[in-house]
Length: 368
Image (cartoon, rainbow, N blue to C red; front, top):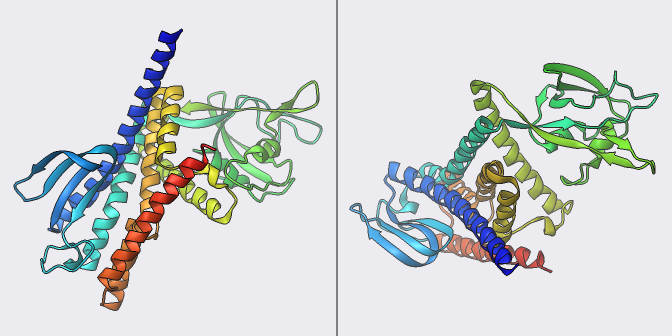
């Protein structure tokens, strides 16, 4: 019994290590984006670091740049000369043209997003695109097989828009009134069929976790002996050809990025509680659990989601993030004069502290 428990613990530790490696890969790719574009425009680069904390390995390259591996594998950075101050060196970050700095700043997010697209393409190639299969449909005198979907239908499109995520179904139905008709394209008996589905009740969603209105509006349920609803909608793998896979990989990745933005918006407006968020520790735990229960498919999915998440998050105009630095570059570009460098450095410093404290707070509040 003790050996079994020890084996289970060590097995879970393995999944945690995989989750840490995924996060480290995404951060390294992000910083590599800054590094590569910085090299193109001949920015002075002081150090490229994988991880943070004390260095366990250092190597000075012929170009003078320092490459380092650091003890904590949960971060990384690409340090430019004169990034947070005034420097006489023409290669210093703040001495470069604003548009060049903007390209360097957004290149990290772009690399995350491109990697996410590549991962999604691999996921679609190995497993197929996730689609939703209707397992149960409730009919009565008003809602029949002619104006409803059937058991076994696989949802492909709603109102001629591809369906990738359950949020696509939610977005397509949100605001619909009872009696409205929605054109839904499904795979039925190997053929693609478009069905004019009659909405069974008014639809309004409060947050991305509230999917019950989907089942109620489309009748995806049966009634048990106690006359209670038993919902049923499962996921299946949809195979598409090579060229369609490329286009769908881009579209799916944009959908993931849109989901991240939607969640952030709902958090800001209070439609989602803070408990729905997580910091670095929560991300690692959720990723490890997903890989443990879902295997390689979930590894690919969660990796693509983390990539899109990092891309979107880093472009937010919040102090210390790349998006905020882009704003300061735009101000300098438009008004031909930078914001005082010391003031900007203080703003980013405070922003970094706030982000770190907030990440720790939301991790801790999930524990209590």
